[in-house]
Structure formats: structure tokens, C-alpha cells
Length: 302
Image 1: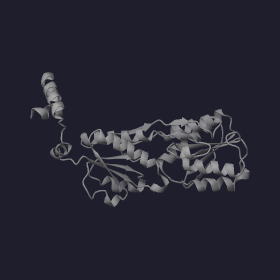
Image 2 (image 1 turned 180 degrees about the vertical axis):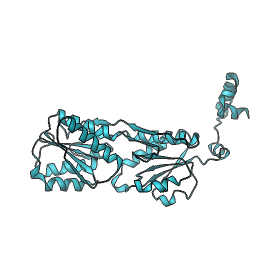
Image 3 (image 1 turned 90 degrees about the vertical axis):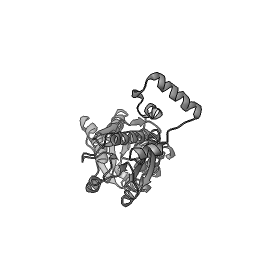
Image 4 (image 1 turned 45 degrees about the horizontal axis):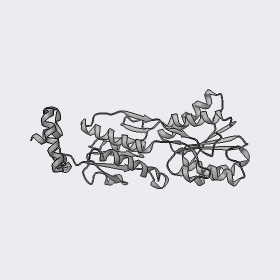
């Protein structure tokens, strides 16, 4: 009982007793049994991470996010279970859920979940969430393009009606309007071949001194290939800025200027928010937007 108090309620014992117990624990190499502790608290010490998106268009992004979540959970001796089919979410018990890729049509289903939930990604339905500050990221990219005197600044967006895309477009639009310039937005699927095809098909419409600000690194990769394929010079005549900064920016030649998301940190914050929500019996945690960073490389004038 004394050892339990030192571990779980150290404020209830004297500093001298706490020191004696900790010394004995060190000598005996004693570690609390997390499974027994979870059982005593009627918990599983398992968190499920549900991906509702097509992994083919998000990898390797989610591998990096998974690492961050796992690292955050491991500090509290929680295990992480990956789920890719929402029908399997409740097959085994868990203490809570982290969900990404949720759409407006998923709200009714999420509302029925009995355990605490935190979303990864902006939402406008009142759920607790963590995300990159998407609006700020594209504002940074657009302001930099303007500072480097690109005359035509075109946005290549992802053809989805979701808050993260609206925020990225808003960062671009608001910045241009402050400078009394007209926005140009073209939306397409989140695949490099789609942006490559779009630019090649419309190549004659794009004058020199144009920069393409892209809603993802995938679209930016396609833009780089199309410019090179059509004889454009990067970054002197044409610039490209991506968004994400997870691996794909490194495989581009030249390496891609991108709005880099702190993905590992985002994963750790998701774990922290959910565990805090569990500890507080499901109390609302709110929202958190984490600032990204514009990383300058070879596809933009410096």
C-alpha cells in the first residue's frame, strides 16, 4: 500500500518515505505493472488510430504521424492500434480514438462512439482537433512569392470540400487581395500526374515569371515535372511551392520548396490531448492549430 501511494499519490507521503521507497525500487529494479494498473482503473491502455483516407495518396505522411502518436502514447505506457476500416473500430476494447480523414458525412457515426475521440484535421462540427495552421502556411508561401517578384501567382488546389483545403485557399486568396492581385485557383485530384497534365495542357497560357503554389507536395512534384518537360527554367522563370514537407519534397529534383508541417509534433500533441481527455472523463479539449514553416529550396528564387 505504501509503494502504491508513492507511485500513484506521492503528495500523500513524506519526502523521506518517498526517497526510501524509490531507493528500494531502484535496487530491486521494480517497475509498476501497467497492465495491472489499467485493469484496476477499468482501462485497456490501448488507443486506436483510424485512417478514413486513401493511404495511397497520403503515404508517407501517415507513417510519420504514426511515429509521433506512438511516441506520445509510449510515455504514458499506452499501446497504439492502427485501424483502416471503421467497421472494425469497436471489435476490441480501447480507451479512446484518434481519427483522421473524417468528413461531414461521418458526424452521425462519430457521435455514436462511446469512448473519447480526438480528430486530426480541421473540422467545423465542434469536435476536439489538432492540425497544422493551414491558412498561415499558404499565407507564408504567397507572401514569399510576392517578395520575390513573381508576377503571376497561381494556386493548384485539391478537389475536396474540406476545411483544410478551404483554409489553404483562404491563406492564398487573402494575401493576394491585400496586395490587390486577382487569385487564380485550379483544383484537381491529389496526384502528381494530374498537376503535370494540367500544366502541360495549358503551357502556352503560363508566361514566364509565374509561380505555382500547391496544396500538397504531390501536386508540386507534378508541377516541377511539367515545367521541366516543357523547357521552363526553375526557379528563374517558374517557381513551385508545395505543402507537407514529408519525404516527397526530398525526392524532387531540384528539391522542393515547401510549407513543412511538424508532423511528429502533431502526433505527440494528438496523443497528449486524447490522454488528457480520457483522464478528464471525456471533457471537451477544444482545438489546436500548430504553425508550419516555409522551407526554401531549389524550386523558388531566394
